Image 1 (tube, helix red, strand yellow):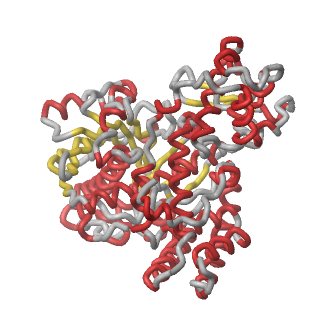
Image 2: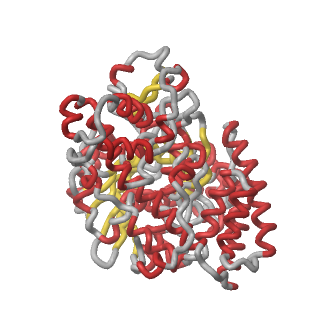
Image 3: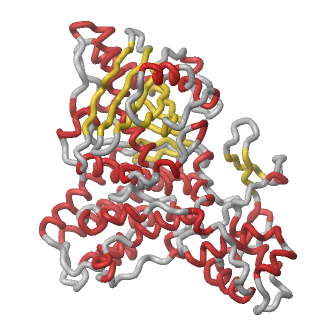
Amino acid sequence: MGNPDLAQATVVLRRPPSVVMRLARMGSAHPMRLSFLRVLLRRMQSGAWTFDRPVWDVDNKGVGRAVYRAVGPDRTYCLVAFSHDLPDDMRSDRVIATAWDATFALFDGDPTVEDLDRLEQNVPYQEAGRISGRELSLSRANRSVRLFSHVVDRLAKGQQPDAEEMAGVGYLMRTTAVYGSGKFGAADRREIAGREELAAPFQAEMLSVWLTRQFTVDIVEHLAAAKGGAAAVRLDVGLKRGLGVGNSTGLGMAPFLVRHPILLNNWMMTREEALARVRSLTTATEAQVAALKEAAQAAIVNAADWRSEHPIQVSKLADLRGDLERIAAKLDDFPSSDTYPWNALWIWGEETLSEEGQEALLALVLEPHGDLVDGLSDCMSADESAGFTIDGSMTIGGLRSVLRDRYDWALKIDYSVPEEQARFWYVSEEKLEPRLGDRATDDGASLEQPLCTGRLAWELEQSLNGWSDGDLVAAFLLRHPEHRFMVRRAQIADRFPYAEVQDNLISDRMLPIDLMRCKLAFFGATHFDPRSDKWVRISLFQGAPYPLDLSEGVVR
């Protein structure tokens, strides 16, 4: 994985899956150097990508279309944006919405006028329209109405918006969906996975959101100029830099990590490898210490600006703020005289900090070590066909061993207790999106999706009773084909140790937002703000440079 010479120097072991793959810890994840938007920004800068806006055909009401172009060494991508005059009573973040303030498609290459006309007939309708293999993503966004109007009004009068209001929201618009990988006619992942700039996970989607961020500022400045004329001013550079793109995400995202076990393994193992490499270092240079302290201070500022009213997140934020102060105080004496100073710092964190603080510390200690960990981003994709074929020649004894080793957490649960199977996952017939039902009160349990891997492992073990260790899995599955799904997952988990979430995903204690936060942290999301246990708002690219002025800042 990554540079073999560096890997051989790793003397500290990765944290085991029994620690890493628990929901409470996954739900405390923080963005880091290996997060996908950071990977994208580094590649854009190192590859000397250029950006422009060749089309801006938007009227004084903010209605029209625009094109944002990203030109790389080998290929060009364009975000085609459509801006709409949406009545307030039609604005909704729910997946069942049918109209939005803006809609987008990421186009592969330079679109012609005919392409733009075709997209204008389809993109504003999202799921009700259709796009082609020339498009890599389909998305939509709504205004943060209060802040958006405030910024337009202030800029139109020649004034800057209130900094406190800007910090309180953190974005002018929020996406409510960013579809890729073949949905609604877009190019399938396999069509673009071989491109160097898109090989890492979700690079097309991250590029789409980053270009959308530029649009959100351009449209607010355009409307301010239309309203205020010569008196209008542009947004202050510092205030502008503090804006991201919001995102409103519901249950549709939660099952992704369960449905992609090899991909999940590669994400988690890569992150754990990066941590192990840093902990294995025997020195801490002056530059590394300075970078660590700078990252810690930035995290303190970020945590102070991070707001939520959800009681779970309020508690987590209190833990985080206290832990970051403890980390900052600890760094006054860093590095220690230990042979492995980074490992000593990490062990102190495990003994002292909450899970929230420990995962924040992970992000901090990776920050000064780009040369050591950035190359690992090449290990985060997955060939998911590799685990599809079941090995029927495995013995029952071998399968039992896998269940004991990889699913011991599941075999300890008593699934006859109602609390341990209180919920069930299903797919909404209306929107074809994942949903979570209450087994005691909701209809539809007969349509349950196989996301309860713990219970499936427990049921598989029960069915193995009476079979000899020397019997073959092929013979067992001929008798019990209902266990094919779980046998396949067990064989995947045998080869990919971080493939399974090691918690009961149908218990009454399970919080879907833990799954969401883990995935969103890998995206690079900040300011995680749950609105319930089933949906959340976050911000992307906050603090990053903008495409049209990338040369102004250094992307780390």
